[in-house]
Image (tube, rainbow, N blue to C red; front, side):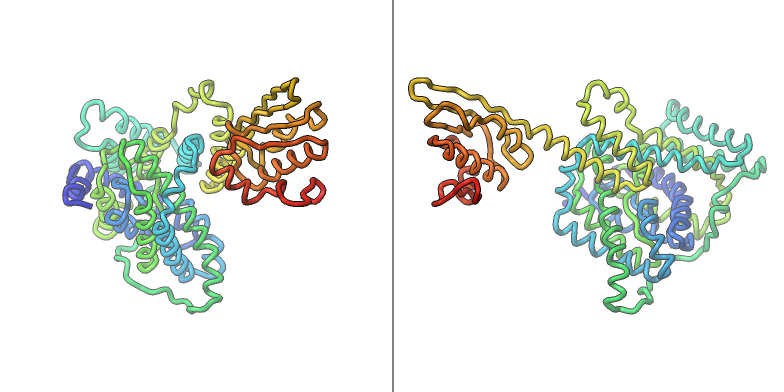
Length: 490
C-alpha cells in the first residue's frame, strides 16, 4: 500500500469518519450485549470482542469503512460449546477460528466470491434487512406510548435532518436529542444499562486456561471451522455490498486475513469470535463513513463510552437505538428487487426468495446462501444441459450426418442419446461435435455408447469436429477404438 493510499484511507474523510464512527459505537454496544447473552457469556465478552475486532480490522482489513465486531450469526454457533465446556474453551475456539481464517485468506478464498450469483446476494441482503427489523420488535413488547413516540421521533430526526444539513450524521443527533428528552422527562423507558451490567475495565491479555491436548482440539475444532466459514462468508458478502454502495473495490483475501488476525487478538483479550456486520456497516456508510478511521473510532469510542462515560451511556434509551436499527433495515433492503420480478428470469426470482426464506426461517445466513448457491447451480446445469442435434441424410452415399450443438456433460447425455436412430437406413454415420464441448467422463462414455451401438447395427462411425480439449479427453478416456470394445463390456 503506497503513501497516497494510506493517506486517503485514513485521513481523506476525517470529520465524517469520526462522527460516523461515534454513531456506530453507540449502536454496537446493545448489539454486543445481546449477542453475548445469546452465546451464554458475560456482556463484557461481546464488548471486548467488538473493541478488539474493530480496532484490528481498521488496520488489517481489506475493505475500508466496513465494521466488524461480535455478531449474532457467530453467537448462535457458540451456544453448545459455552454450555458444555465454558468460556475458556470458547476463547480457545476463537483463536483457532482466527488461525483458520488467516490460512483461508492466504489460500485466496476471496476468489470464490465470483461463484455467488447476484440473486443470492440480493436474497442475503433482503433477509438480513428482515432479520434486523424483526429483531427490534421484541423491544415493543409491553411498551407504552412513550416508546412509540421515542422511536417515531428518532426516525423523524434521522430522515428529516439531512434535508437541512449533513454536517453531522442524523443518527448521532437523534441519539443525543432523544437521550436528553428521555432523561429530562423521566419516561422510564428501557435503557442500554438494562441490557446488562457494564464494567469499566479494559480487556487484558490472557491465554485460555485449557489443557493443550488432542481431546481439546477435538472439542473446539468443529466449532472453530464452522465459525471460520460463517464469519468469512458474512464478511466477504458484506464487503461486496459496501463495494457496491461506495462504488469502490476491496481486497477480499486481505479482508479474510484481517478477520483471522482480529479473531486471534479477540480470543487473547477475552473476547468471542466475530465478523463483519452488514447493519453497522450500512450505518457507517449512510452516516458518511468511508475510511479506516471510521472503524477505528467505532471501536475506540465504544470502549471510551464504557470506561469513561459509563454513567451517561447506560442512560441512552433503547428506543432511539431501535429507531436507528429500523433505519438500517429500511436502507439495507433492496426495494428495487420487488419491482424487477417481471423483468428477471423466473429462476433468479426463485433463488432470491428461497435464500430469503431459508435465512429468515433458520436465522443462519450461511444456510440461506448455501441453499441459494446450490439452487442456482441446479438451474444453471438444467439451462446448459439442453442439447440440439440436427441430422442430414445423403441418399446417394447412404451417409447420415449428426450435427451436435451444446455442452456435453453428465446432465445432458440423456438428452443427447434420444436424438440418434440406431436403426436408420445408413451405411456410414458421422457425428460432428464442431459446435459442442466434451466436459467429463460421462460425456466420453456417451460417445463410446453411440459409436459401439451404431457398430452393432452394422454401421461405420466417424467422430469429427472435436476441439483440442475435447479431443484430448476422448483420447484419454474413450474405449470405442480399443480392441474387443462393445456396449456390453463398456
